[in-house]
Image (tube, rainbow, N blue to C red):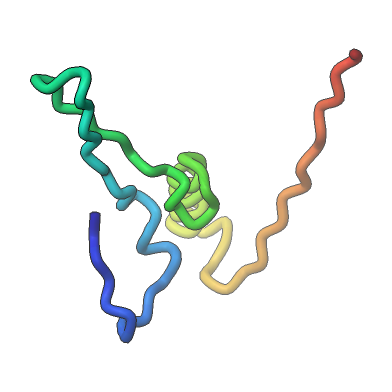
Length: 82
């Protein structure tokens, strides 16, 4: 896990793709090496942050959007009968 100096200014975008990996001590399986990725540490709390960043970077490269443009995405809720 990366340790950050409190005086260092951070951009949330720098955290995407740098998900911390933590080794788990499994006492029931002493010969096992178990690690987990803490995806909740992404700025949006999801692995989907990487996908969103790639879409935005690709759109900037292709000229569809430029830095500083405001982006809005309407989220539709799926309601299942029930």
